[in-house]
Length: 371
Ligand SMILES: [Zn+2]
Image (cartoon, rainbow, N blue to C red; front, side, top):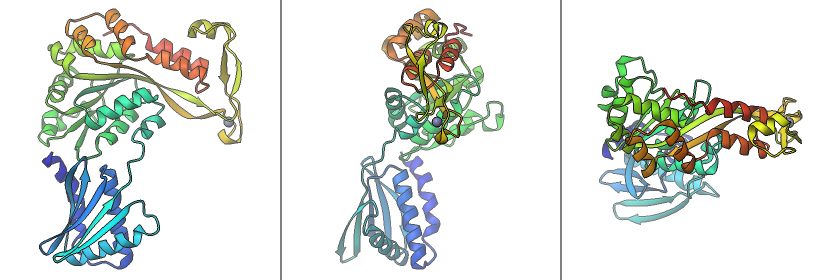
């Protein structure tokens, strides 16, 4: 989309005017390369264009101009590109001379794992794949459900950062009560991706769905105990259930838990009540916190998200459109993805979190309250 590409161009404009020492041109080149990588480019072209040089990045097959430089700046950038390529600048360089000037092609290696930031949050591979696909190519509404302190904002940030790759423009509406940045005024800026930290009121839910139905991606947080409850709340607030059903893509329900230190966690038999509450066979092995140098004696290594999710497939969309109740929604939801409780149980077996945290998460997320 052209309009969204322009936001990307602007930051390079001020780099063209002033002359530079060799150190400056290397810094300028490295910043250019970093920007190209951040945009997901697989190649960068330096091409003479009349008196000037055009520096363009190939992103998803399309060439996007990153910088227009005068001949002096362009030549110092090209010199920096040659110097940085040796011995291993992380790209290969091909140069050819033409009557009008030298053409340079930098081929960038394949992207590092885009899902790494999602995995770092604790998302299991199937969910990371769903979120990556929705962030990079998706349209419609993606919801992250959880009370304050469940890590929803962090998930929105991470997914927004993924969605911002390429030439998509992400706008954030952080404060639901601030009327100065109404959704309409944000829309005037023609974003490809809109982030709404808390989808609280009916006033927001309606326009958010309208935007999601306009070939844009809307990422929103919602304070709801679980996925079905989040869907039911939106369905109750939104008069047009068909539009909700046809634009809702994924609903994630999440909680945070302490991540056990791998170096010192202690295997032990689950207690009778833990086994009963988690549905484990009696005598199942779970892990408790130990304490070692690696974790500063705490037994824990930070926190991890625990996720459940629903993919809105055609059957789920029909249920939402038809006004199905929470019982029906829950039954089908379990076919499209695990609940946080199910994920938590698997993480207990893998020694990632404690049985006590899993019990808490199961309790919190199996609430049947739907309004
Ligand atoms: Zn430890």
